[in-house]
Image (cartoon, rainbow, N blue to C red; front, side):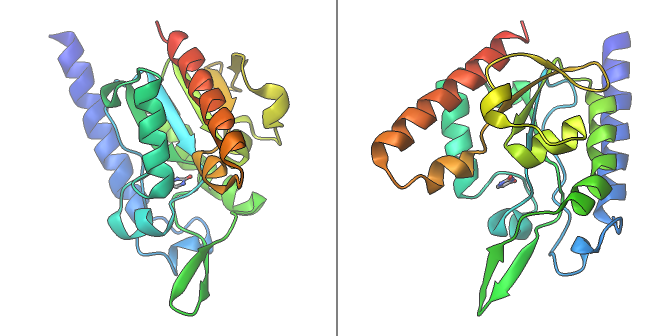
Length: 205
Ligand code: URA
């Protein structure tokens, strides 16, 4: 059918895009990183989730959100009634940025120039998938998608328009939940995160 043909073409275009991204040298972050961690999920996904950048485990595995933050994210998705098949998961920056400390690699925040250099890939992913809803997980993702600084506290909980016209929602990054020291606050913030995911999900139907 026409639909499978379109699906097939989108699939091939995505594979080509990913292949190209594997050799990306748009910024210097490719040098110390193990590999590009590109987005993953079906090209007909209705929801696109955008994180910050791969972490230590994602850099080694080559897949987004497979480490500790990914586990919180998976749990929250399930709690919100969102299935993996509906989602495409990617990052604003596609190489792991870190500072070596002994044998450990400590996460370092991508700067404005790195986010800007990597925006090209997100734009390609957006054009290819045309998701009904894009969800920015945290400030870096929001900055990349909107092209400007966005305040999560002020923007979360409602539908927003992306510069390309698509619908977006902004919520916290799952690693923020991991960093909260207080168990009660952690529980409350996790519940709020799940609520944000539910609202964004409801906007796809
Ligand atoms: N944090 C992110 O923002 N992205 C990942 O892929 C993993 C952790």
